[in-house]
Image (cartoon, rainbow, N blue to C red; front, side, top):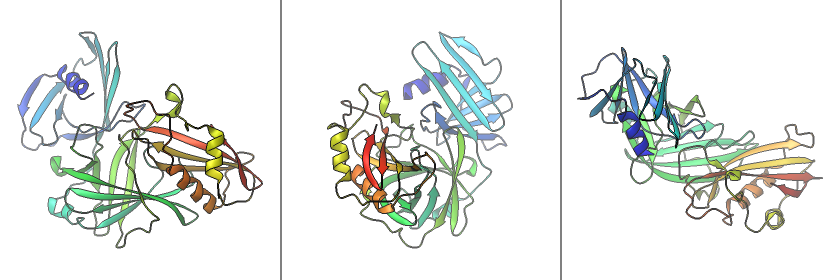
Length: 359
C-alpha cells in the first residue's frame, strides 16, 4: 500500500523543490485512506492558489500538483480530485484496485515546543463514545494517556457501567510530534513509525486540559483531555493492542465466518458458568475486537428489553461476561491473518438468566 501511495502521487508530479519559507497557505492533514475502512496514514498538503503541495513530515521535500484539468486517465489509471475549503479528496481507480485519500483543513491553533513540553510526566483522561470504531451505546469509556517522556506514553482504557468499573486494558506506545507551520500533531505507534499511523492535532492547550482533533468514520472527532493527578482506578488491566489503526474487518467477511472453534453450545456453557443473575427479559449484545494475534479487547455494549428497547441489566453480569470473553483465544482465524476483526455476541436473557447466545 505504501508503494501505491508513492505511485499515485508520482503520476501527478509537476516538480520537486526544497522546503520554502513559511507563507500564508492553507494546511491540510491526512484523515484517512479508503472510506470503507478508514485506514490512518501520515501526510500533509499545503494548498496555495491553484496548486497542492504534498510534503513529508519533516517538510524536507515537496511534491507539487496543479489543480487544472485534473480529471484524467493516465496509463489506465483513472483519477479524480475534489477540493473544498475544508476537505481535499483524491481518488485513484485501476482495474486491480480502488483507493481514496482524504485530507482535512487543520484547526487554527499554534503552540511552541516549550508549551507542548508542559504535558510531560502528566496524566490526562478523556471520555470516548467508543474505541477502535467498535459499536457502543451503554458503556462509559475513558482513555487515559500518561506521557512518560517526550517519546513514550502509557494508554489505559477503562470501561464502566452505572459508575462501576467492569474492565480495563493498557498498552504502551511510542510518540512522535510534528509541527508544520507551528501546528502541533501527535502520532502514537509501535516499533518504527510508518505511513499508517493517525495524526492527532493538539488544540486548546491549557494548564489543566487540551484537545485532540482527528478524523475517522468520515467525520471530525474532538476528544477533550483533562489533567488527572491520580491514576485512573482499574481492575487487573489486561495488555491489549490493535494491530492496525483502521476499522476492523467484520467476522462474516471471512470464509468460514470467524467464530468460537468449539461451537456456540460450548461457548454458552463456558460463559454462563458462575454468572450472576439479573432481572428482566431481553438481550445483551457485547461487541469486541479480535486482533491479528487472536487476542480480545476494545469492548462495546448494547442492552435491550424483549421489545428491543433500551434496557439496563446488572453490571455484575456484564462485568462477568466481558471478563470471560476477554479470555477467549480459541477463534478459527485464518492462518497468517494480518487484520483485526469486529465480532459480537448477543445473549438472550430469560427471567434474569442467560439462556442463548448468537450468532
